[in-house]
Length: 110
Image 1 (cartoon, rainbow, N blue to C red):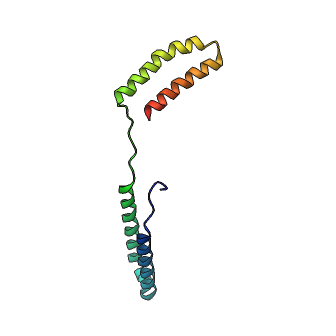
Image 2: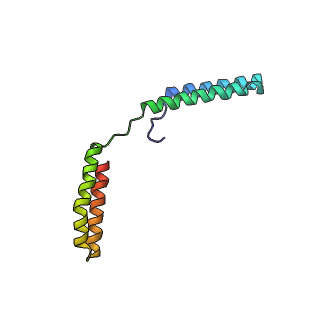
Image 3: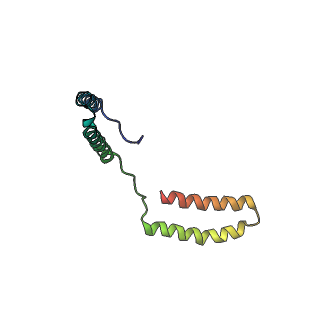
């Protein structure tokens, strides 16, 4: 929810006034108004949530399509297997090659 924009001061004041008026009416009418109060408040909050969700920025898709990502994965295997075999004698280099392949695939998926 932190990525959503907060209510404007005008919207917050309107909501505050509505809730205060509703609570005042509840005090005058009594508990018979509780169900209506809860329903109205729920509808108001849901409407605000829907509005904020509609205005929220959409997550961006990967710049690579599925076939390009598949190609990168296949190339990682084709080049990775011999590189792993070559570096198997040196643990530090082995870990570096594995990390590099993982990073390439990770950034390709973004």
